[in-house]
Length: 411
Image (cartoon, rainbow, N blue to C red; front, side):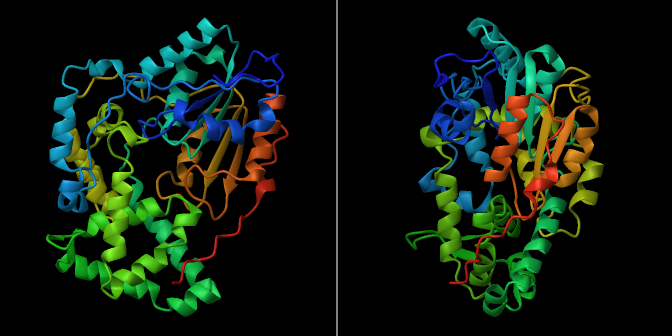
């Protein structure tokens, strides 16, 4: 807990609900203290590691070992690592790691600390935790911020292929409209299509050290680019990476893929993969219908790669049956602020359109040229107004307008 600077805190703390699923909250104390500095004069910041993450008996997994680099270049979820993770936590009661349990944990902490209704601040998968809390403990929420909202009744990652397709088109268009990017990569779209054709035929890349070569699947490459498109800063590098692949310079791509995976590994990982699988396998893949895969993936750059990777991983992970009404949409009058990005390759704008009608008092903000769970000074000011007033009325969602893209990397 970060106490209010005034020493006289109001009864409504700010409580971040993390995404992933599997991200920890307590380690982000400094980040949120800075982000919410203007609100923490009279409000506490309460950080709770969801059970299975951080200091709450984290279900960490040794997912991406350096000596398994070749497998990590082929698989987003390496099967041997998933099996190892499942064995590591075989004694855990996996029924204890649902968002329903987390909602009850939040309510327990609220009562023990003597707080009134809380200001929930959720992003990405954390918005599902917020929605479950609003369904199970509606009187205990004062406001809710839902950034890059994830509907309860949509199977993730099924929509990602089409969402990514749209973001790629916008990225190609933005590069073509930018004089420096267009001059550096005048045939970016054609180069990308050629790279995909080569990958379909088979491209071998060298694992760092040079002793081992492995085939890089098309889906692994495109899924890695999808993650780069989450943030405007890393999205600005995507044309450069595509061009490197086109000219056959795979080294920076391989090095970055492995660097990205190593940062997610073991005790240093910001994501508890055991919790990720506990949530995602029971809450998403358990509801996947085979007939829905092809219509959502055919004709896209990503195809069904991410869906199949997650489907295979979840075969190694025990699932828990959720209540029949678990995926029912939320109906609430709790003041809610929705913030979305129009270049988000994970949670497209139609997610907000699907969820928002159930919130009778809401404001919606769309950040142009921004991706997944992005933040800006303008959003920060709106959020301060929202929390201080405790209502969505009067929030001008159009005031943030279009944000300038960062300069594209050209060399």
